[in-house]
Image (cartoon, rainbow, N blue to C red; front, top):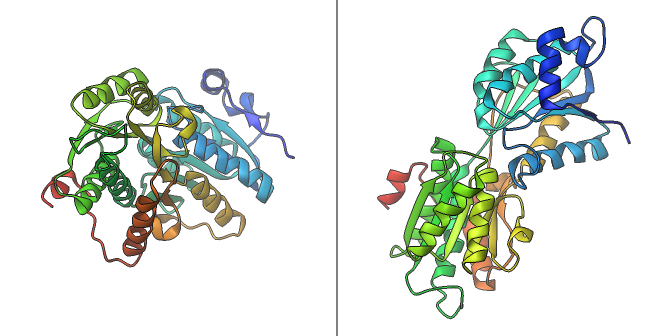
Length: 343
């Protein structure tokens, strides 16, 4: 197995700013790019979020094992550090691909990509329009729709001791941005597709790494009668799942399978298969097929989905029917909350 270089955020940035990239990596002029060497800059939630970053890390580890690459990575603690890390990696000239994880890297990547036009970049979950940037985004509303279907069907199961009689479901988002709003819009639309009388609450943490606030918002919803609550909030969502477990209602995980975080309380997980996306991006480079532009991934691409977890058999059956309908183009899903509310 090839060796990975672990870039420690604070130290690496300090070395880069004071002495240049040669102090971090190796002395001398920039190296020739090695298609088998990959760099990845994670989102500010960091590794251990048991969500988006961890899924991306799994993808690059799979690429190491399955495709024979070696990789370096960085874990910024603030958005302001993205530019430094991306510049640091690009200045070496050694990477076949530099991957940015998360929508909030778009501004930094746009600038760095323009400064290093010969370097290939990939951006997951946002778009930078540049010939040397491959942007991978998701049909977020499709995933939200599946979660709304599952939640609406479950909240109507009054014989379940974790379900009350109020038909109320909720979702806690990380930040109020189009990406999260598309998830929420799909969630509302999916619920109304099943039962227009289901009430859907939503709120935003305002941060990706504040589990305490996520828990507080979820508890408020639960006290208001919500018995199924989805977290779409990165590390902040861990607090949402804590609240579900402590209050004996159903939580829904995000991005990866999070059943272990609240045993016997995770109804399902809205899967965004970031590991597959990272693997696709790296595979394209290794095959000499890198191309700048936007690639939109959805249910039809097996990039979005759900876990069976605690779902009742009839819910799983209905979700499979809905997936087939979405893939066939027979269900039109709104991307904004206002549009979803009008259904």
